[in-house]
Image (tube, rainbow, N blue to C red; front, side):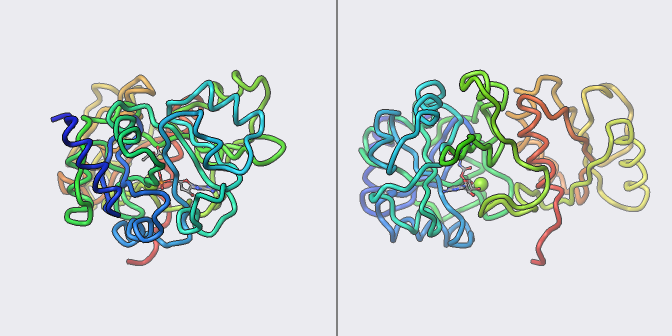
Length: 325
Ligand code: TXA
Ligand code: MG
């Protein structure tokens, strides 16, 4: 059920008291704390099991509050904020004095965004300050896109979860570093590279598909329990059947080009043809195959343009080398 005004007030009170609140955004659910309360911010890292060097995003209620949180706002940042906020875009700027180093992992820059979700915006207005919120999942695992996912991930670690229904975008915000000469995408997400370039009227830098660009961007991230194997679309069926014969419980992401194909596997998800629907469903599909007991997921990458860039980035990371448990 969608959060009521009473729920919002309760959540705002918990934030003021140093508590942690699960909140819906248009991208994924966040685990929120008062951005200006170092003890509450530190609690986020404990509950997520996230290393303290991994910076968080500060969520604010409106673009006109940006100057309160950062040292300076370059022109490109102002243009992007005016155009895309509220929305799935995070800007990395020079840290304002209000932001404790606990929130930035010790960095002199800070990531800021205005989420496009009525419940998140109502909470930010009722609370009045900034809310640091990483995705509300355990470190390295699949981001939550429903209130139930948050409870399943974090249990008692979160004081209260605001329910805002399933997230519409389904993958995290696009993170753009606007501190340098050329804006650089640090993480592809809900706002596409093409949209950024159209609004700025010039090219932006894009991430390499491998390597660790920024803190908190380990190769293995967004990962289900099942191991993820990426193959060419035309090899998905053969690869899945081979692994199934070898005794794996195989989950398949059947690409749109193979809709209706017969595949012998433990569980099959047919990937939506529309990138927006794929992004929206992606984390739910991964969770579903985990829940069905799959130990191996065979998938292929979508075309890396538009939202496909973010989807491919998450699939690559889900398939990335895992640290020993
Ligand atoms: O859509 C989203 O962005 C969601 C919702 C809840 O807003 N939040 C989210 O937060 O994805 P999180 O903590 O899971 O990912 C934040 C990313 C991290 O990978 C971190 O490296 C990057 O933001 N980040 C934060 N501050 C940064 C900074 N100062 N410089 C570079 N990267 C930064
Ligand atoms: Mg995350």
